[in-house]
Amino acid sequence: GQQLNQSPQSMFIQEGEDVSMNCTSSSIFNTWLWYKQDPGEGPVLLIALYKAGELTSNGRLTAQFGITRKDSFLNISASIPSDVGIYFCAGRLPGTYKYIFGTGTRLKVLA
Amino acid sequence: KAGVTQTPRYLIKTRGQQVTLSCSPISGHRSVSWYQQTPGQGLQFLFEYFSETQRNKGNFPGRFSGRQFSNSRSEMNVSTLELGDSALYLCASTEGTGRDADTEAFFGQGTRLTVV
Image (cartoon, rainbow over all chains, first blue to last red; front, side, top):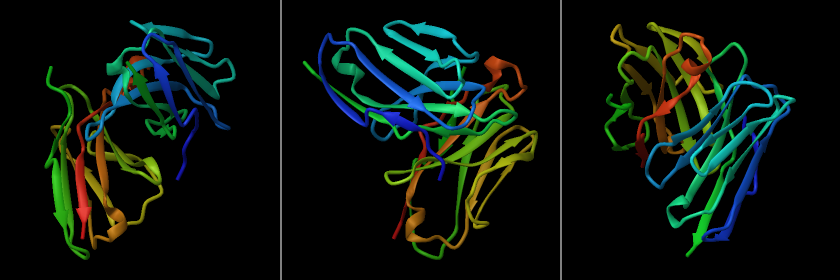
């Protein structure tokens, strides 16, 4: 199936550190969404991006829509233990409501 | 506003059986999409319904089907279950009217299907 390249696959970080992850694709997308998923739960929407070059923040989270429309990144500043989970990017194919998801970044925060 | 509700949360079925999963979208949302999540394949798009019509379809066999009712609730059916159908099935709700903010997809907690 189709998936976006998301990196890193996993990371251990110390509490208080900043985290950065990104997604790249060969396809152009009209919308980028970033989600966090906890075990046994559905993904929770964190940030939505609609325009190339757009930079959006939600608390300690900042995400950007790449200018080529083929990539996006997510930064988490001053990480805390509850940031633990799997983060997914999702790109919406133009003219559809079909989202292609990234392979996920598993984040572990060491207190 | 209530979120996306999926029922049941857990299901165990035997190979060859069929199963129906249900999804109630956020009130006012008219688009419902279904995704399959497995450790190996990640999140894969199954199909999307809007106003009782299937608008988009993923690359799954015909054993996977769905429908949407006039109140926007949706059901997904899988016939002749195979072991490989074991997965978390997620439903996503979107306003679906085409404006930027209306394309945000909100997920339910999912239905964990185990085929034995």
